[in-house]
Length: 571
Image (cartoon, rainbow, N blue to C red; front, side, top):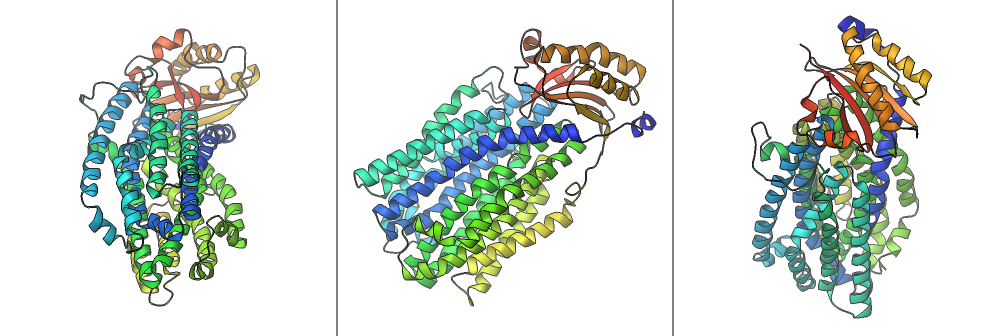
């Protein structure tokens, strides 16, 4: 078998096409959702600065680290559970995904509730630690109390964005994010601009918008066909522990905690140097980071569900193709935005009606540095998401540890020389160090510039015309035994013809995979708008442990694509 596999043809074009289409299905809804989701707090900040002035606006920078802590909790549960769900997409084990999802939601509820109560009763010392000034302390307290009371919707919306995307429902994520943003913006305009209410009204608008989004998520979790659905949380033999489930989410969790630490150091340096003006500077930059996150997160986050699904399939070639494709696409997306901000930083400043002389002098350079740093941030995020998807999150965690240490150290050292610019330089130096560590220690340059066949014995594809299908069969016969080929011709290709019907899909890939466990997988992947689970497949697709049945066609959704697969045991 090994000798025959070595002679198999490998053409990456069809698989690359499907990865690109799948990533677009993830990226476009995610980008539009993030556009609304991240612009929503920006609109809140703009309304606060325009209606209440620069002092209340500066209070946002003292509260933001607490928001990031809850984002870290949501990322831990959403990414950790979501990657497990994506691996179940690769293997086809729906029942495991549902149990893991249910236990994760219970854990998130408990942790969020306890943390919110502790922070609520310790608000004043926390705000003092976060560098709130006498002028903005009352505003910060009012805003933070409402955020803590609404912490569950904040966490569940954040986690739900990852979970639903990994469960093939990015359109619902898009709709929920747009709805939350519209509600948030409308309430901000009505309560602040119309009724001239205080900063607490803006916090209420944010929390209520996210509550509406969470309520929109709930029907998905009750659908019978969903991987993420509520079932009995009782753990079965062989199920991953809660630690194992959440572990893939630790890099993303640490990233948000790192942002919180970075913001605390940033406020410490700027608050001591320029008081409320420095905190106002910090608030503007925080909103710029939110804006840039629309593009960095949209391009980097799909790496997780795409790569983890291929990883669950034991397809090393596919995971490398995902990394390469997503990184190139992200850079094409991000570079024009960065150049625009570098050349015209005043356009972004104008949104916040900046009039403070200190801010007017220092902000343009800060915006330029932060914009350039977004390129390194995206590189780190894409590589970390790839590591999380391939069970190497320990390397990602170390990289964030390096980033935190370098960021704090360099910022505090530079504060003695260039205090108003030290946080931005410190963040860039930390990002560059983390990138170098990931490329060297993680050996992540592999696959970035050229493609590798890895454990693929044969890879081809194209449109499912009769002559192409016959050619695929001939190529498969070169790497499969006669018995295996007979099963493929008898079961997989007829199932494929029934699945696509008369409306032919535009692109297909056909793979023979030599798995690391010694098994051989024959996989047909295709992009088709017609539902896969119809007619005779519907009942089969709901069976538990479907992927463990060998010599049988496994029918499943795969990263918004359709997949038919046969596994042959090594024995």
